Image (tube, rainbow, N blue to C red):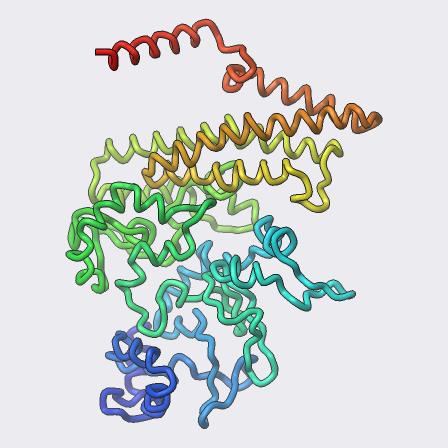
Length: 472
């Protein structure tokens, strides 16, 4: 089907290298007005295969963002629905991905921060947004995608455009933006495969995949061989063990083909854990809670990723890596994620902190940092073999946040609740009882001076051996 459609395009569009047809007019004008765009297109496979400006930008009658331009009905935004004319399989895979839903951030805590805490949104008496928060427009929505609003005459609302966020909501009803990764107007495969391409959004304090990749052996190996690999990355296939022997990029593992596995545009298809929330779950279970159906089981997702790993690594190495990864996620969940979440929610349920508007109390920020920043860094570090992000930027900072800020702030709330009397006093006592149970458990009792004699002896022995080793 794809070949037939592409063939149809080639017959419909006059050969561009001869300078015929509507694209000739576009190129002649934009060569003077926006030469960068024309230069990008000339380097693209689109240009070499006779796909011109009008083929992508042509608008249908009645399209909300359509407008007349130099005798043609066009639109500015080229959506995944348009790209599907030739790239049907890739479009369907992308539509099913978590990337395509990234624009659905509006109700999340992240968006509350951007619209309320750090930003300001103007609301009219009808509860409608009349002015969006600049922090959301220039920050969150540039990665997650905005809902593109069309003004009269097909012009695009500057509060929502320009935007190539991966989960953009387009005027034609489609989700996403192919240009988020395949930067226009050359749409280079090689460029889309570069780790920096993913690092445009996947970096920073809460999801530092780019920094972790740079620290990892994968990232180091790619950097060392980059000049050798770059000419090969423009090929349709980029298969480990065939086209390169080390240094995979993000797309290699999450999307790329192997000798036994097809490429995919669903970046979550090989992910078994969700590392985003306060407490990690297997990704299929998390998806079901949001109403998704026909979800690929996490075991199958992991099996597919293991196939990628085994392009370079032995079976035992791969299995042992996943054991280490699972153990770290479970440690974070059991020691910090679950108890912190339980205690924080309990404080709200007992009326000790307001729950109608978050980030009004210090503990709101403390808890958010614990899972959203430090907790994510630890889990992502383990997933991508970044030991510094697992330890010092991750679990150490989680522990610091939990023991030196979160627990003391809970104790302050408890004392305040006891002093208030009534239902708050009862709630404070219930919260204190549960907090004491957690702190007296095996994982936390050391922090209240109750480490067992056996563990103390083991720690002393290890310390003595360390001193002896380095005293020589």
